[in-house]
Length: 331
Image (cartoon, rainbow, N blue to C red; front, side, top):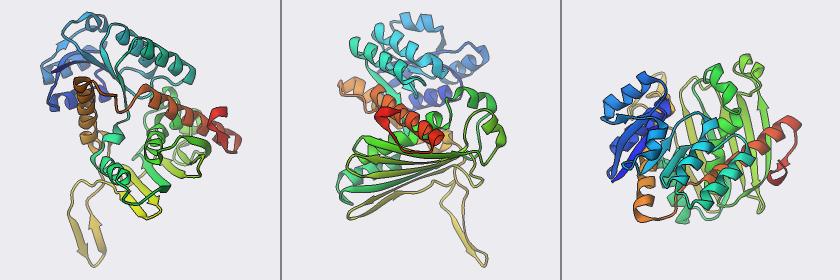
């Protein structure tokens, strides 16, 4: 049994508390949050203790922590818990600054820390099946990938100001997926970015509509399209073109019923939020973390994956600003 403490009882902390409760071989021991009501809500629902981060650090009945605190605390907390020998699952990103991420990776390496980064989309059942078919050679060598990721609406202004921008907050998930599916590191990035859905987002120094083209040294390409507004729901699709065919993962709907009448064909609405769209993925990634600890195998997603995705985000932002392709190593 892996005994967990969750640091942060906000929206994503609640998601991970639920995931831990659903996974065999995992148990939630403690929750920490400075907002008493939030901590009490999780503690009551899952029957765990409320403790401070300091108390969790010293707790002998906690094997692993899940870091769901604000981004600017992630690197410090990863280092802190690695130094006391506890396993760490951390929500992305490690930090918004690549130099700080590299310093954190050095501490993880020096302490032999067991750290997994939360790129949940790799663990979505449909995306995982697509990857398995790809690895099995069903379409031969990969040539082009198209990733569509559009949110139903933008997050609040206070979140945008501390998110690091759309490339580091939203597209970073797609950068990780692209690396995972391409099977090669990206060499150059070309990005276009606009403010099309809400002028307030532009006033905050961010974009709401972006397209990115990634190219590897061998010429493989991945195209990513993001928008902060999709009036029809949470749009999450992947298409992989190979030399012998195509693989695709389609959107998920609230139901599988389709109605056909004189006005055409009508499907149930799309799932409308990441917490419902990726429920299974969140549980699967915690299960994978527990399995890696139990079997002493490598973590399936690492802080190095986080660094590589952040480097792509930095390159995309630079490309959008200068209007030209950027080599990742020069970003």
